[in-house]
Length: 179
Ligand SMILES: CC(C)(COP(=O)(O)OP(=O)(O)OC[C@H]1O[C@@H](n2cnc3c(N)ncnc32)[C@H](O)[C@@H]1OP(=O)(O)O)[C@@H](O)C(=O)NCCC(=O)NCCS
Image (cartoon, rainbow, N blue to C red; front, side):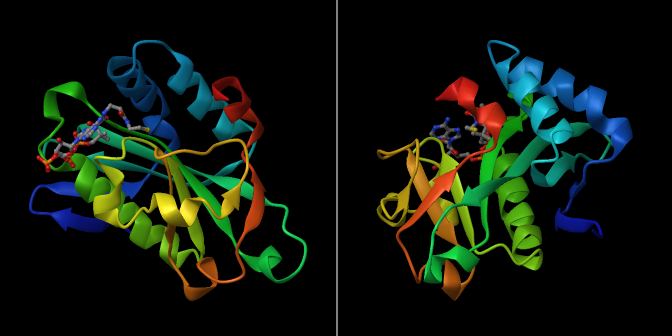
């Protein structure tokens, strides 16, 4: 996928193999344990990732990372054609958090995901943050699976993503550690 300029001094682009070690360091810096670093590693190596992108600053440093993985849609009937992805994790280096990096990374990667013809994106995250991108806990109530509650939100990227719900979903196996 081609690079996307999303701000004057920030580039959001697909992950390259050479970035993997740096992304691991970023994940270890952001989270209190290595669970997210292991999650990303496992998602990558079990072929579950639909899209993985990084935000790169003007000095070429990776300051943000986002992963989207395939969600299995187990609907039988009209909902079965809906393509579902899960946004998790999204991470910004602690020293540059709350400066708009997450915002640019998420908006740009959602555009890329839309170009990949995904219909629906699910997230489990802070309800104070994700609704600004259109994620909606009400829509997520129509997605039946292991997660529920206000932190579980859904965003439809196509009309199909709002139609023919409810559907039943299962997340990639590496998420089982988080259930
Ligand atoms: C959540 C995260 C990706 C947001 O990226 P960011 O670059 O720091 O955020 P932005 O600068 O785009 O947005 C800042 C806004 O988000 C809000 N925000 C950021 N993190 C938040 C959180 N964990 N909960 C609620 N609101 C949050 C800020 O209050 C701020 O709000 P405002 O615009 O109304 O002032 C980043 O803070 C991060 O990596 N956090 C730790 C990991 C995490 O919690 N990931 C999300 C779950 S997978």
